[in-house]
Length: 263
Image (cartoon, rainbow, N blue to C red; front, side, top):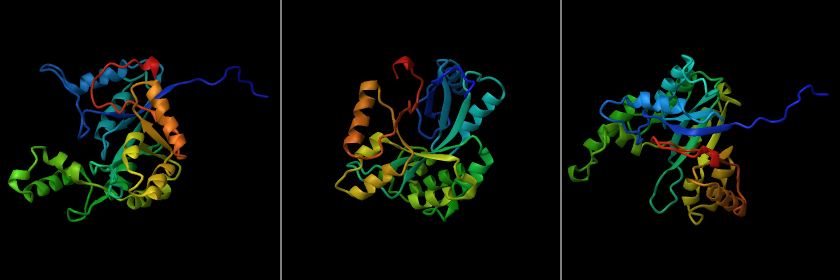
């Protein structure tokens, strides 16, 4: 017989939080404010029942490193666990009217070191359109510079080279699967897709691919503003007879006030 006298303890997790190091973000600061200082103060002031954060900076872990260093120094006692999240853009699936790529998230276990994730996953990805160079911040920026140089002047973007590279770089799902099949990663990651992005992928494009994509992830991210909207999303997935393990997260890209008690 168990000696435990208490039942389950519920904690809130937000596994989709971007940082000021994300290539795309809207964190702002005043003339005398440090954006990272402001960001970390916001993390410290989160409601006490939020215990786990997934730190997401798209292809890289620069923001995660800063948050982890901050926590390791004892300055984030309210958060029990932070997890590194990689957000990829898939090459295979372009199914909506805007021809947008589908974002695909890998949440890695805290049992993996930063070096293991970077050396055995991120740096093993190749920018095939740029001399098959390994993925790095510098190579992504140089890739964007090359794209800009080869684009007609009247069609060139005003974005930074890094953002141009980011907007044009994708990876095949087969390559993602190959990298995650390593023994090092076995049982130490979760796959996630965004509900809105998946919904935008048209059924008439490829029904088999659409169902396979969502049925082969561990759960689905939602960023619904209300419980009612989140429940509608879940019911929609149930009606379509696909994976409906929906997890609400903020997908935070900016400083804002949220009523966490209603989530």
